[in-house]
Image (cartoon, rainbow, N blue to C red):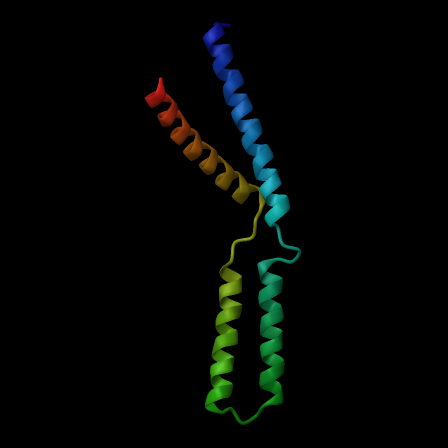
Length: 109
């Protein structure tokens, strides 16, 4: 094997190993105990209970209903930190920061 090819493969291997390790750390730090679907169902259950207790809906009751419905919908749209999402974030950050450091280094040399 050509020495340059071996060096390239080593660097690519180290790059991917480092990226996967960082993605795993992000997953451990950012992962929530419950999924977005479970949080949404909890908020909708609370809303359902409040509506069942009230039969006459005033404007303020309706505003509360709309606010809680929005919170439930927004909770569903939140992205859970999975390993795949963490990989995307980690490799984007590594390549962006690496490019910035490379540009800075090339200007100094």
